[in-house]
Image (cartoon, rainbow over all chains, first blue to last red; front, side, top):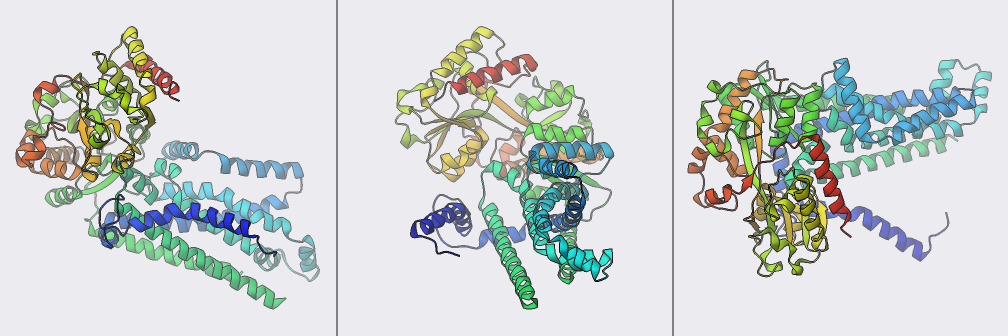
Length: 265
Length: 357
């Protein structure tokens, strides 16, 4: 890689400052004993304590994580199979149509998706709650996973499959030992993207929550009506730290994987 | 491949553990059984200790959910899906819900504590004889301002908003009824006016306010006023109370010409599965002690006279939140205007918005 020029470095630094400043501002005030974001009085952990004492808020936080993990997992499985399916379609026109249909779901407004799910679930008779939220999250994550896995599949050399066939591999072998390992980085990327989509989704989730089941985004939104209290800052801070850890974990998984493949070569 | 399987198993194990944790934690809040009560309320609009106390006293497990707008609340109730036993809509929404046949008439014999409510707040046009609703909190629309930034204006009259010293200093709440209503009030008309000429005059008058208007926004007004980034804002008394709690410099005034009187009310939606429990909850909330505790926590004005006797003298005699009888006579509750006039109000509000540059 060529070295960045000074102006490029400054520009990059500016972009990162703009992106991270609001988060740091928010996290900074979560340690404020003053009770508001006007002025910083002194350091305190009372808002974090308040989060951990509020069992309702904690349950909501845990629910949010469960929904995110499970919906990301399920949509990754469905999306990966879907991407493989789309690639194997021979007719180019048909394949493009399928891809466009996939993309339409990504760009359609969340509010509309949410409202249609609400109507569908109540019509079919699915009780609003954990199941409905999970289903909705899976549904809007699948197209994203498809989009993340697809480039890897297209990039894969078809001769790999031919070679495997020549060596006597069965269909199952090809799937397990050739295709899936090859597209693994795409699968992980899709999983993590689905995870973040699920974590921060408000509009869709708002429509399909019910019966005491709620997620963090919905809860914070209705809390914010009375002005953002520092408990919100504290919980947002916690989520931010967890996300950072997840990203670091993801980095280690991928770098270990790439080292291993390098070692094999 | 091995990695994919490992990752999948890891995710499943973590999810299972988290589910177990969540389950253990919510069990601490009370045994969940057939006897549950699902409450749908605005965010941060109840003292959480009261829910615990109610659970303890009655043995009914409470599921508490929140919404952020009347419209969203009604959509969820209309669609079913969740069996809400209690909802807390504002007065105009109650009229709509009545029209859509979404509410269950209240059995007054099960709510003896309704005697605690000030008769002034009962039997109002949106719900004759309180057939479907009992008041929860109430308030007004007025002007919150920072005295150090507005000179000697005290906003005892709506005219003060037009003062030339307030150029680009006024925030308005983004609501057609509130803003057009203010225009009508400033001319001495009713804020439920159905006279086209009055509405025209009010809009024309509002357009002359345009140079003073800095922005028309929603809940974001709260942090802006708290941080002294704005001098004057038209908003609801409850929101003003929040701002003044955070920033003691601020003051609130309801102009003499009159203004809006709003209500949030407890109702029992048709979806209710625990009607007895819902009545018990309403009665519990109307109890003097719980009303007082709730008003202390939430900071809005309570319609409960028995509770006011228990509350801090300074709070309940504060005429900014508990207006004098004399001023009360100038306040009006929104009437349902019907779709035609509602559309007209929205159109005029849009015209006013477009005049702001």
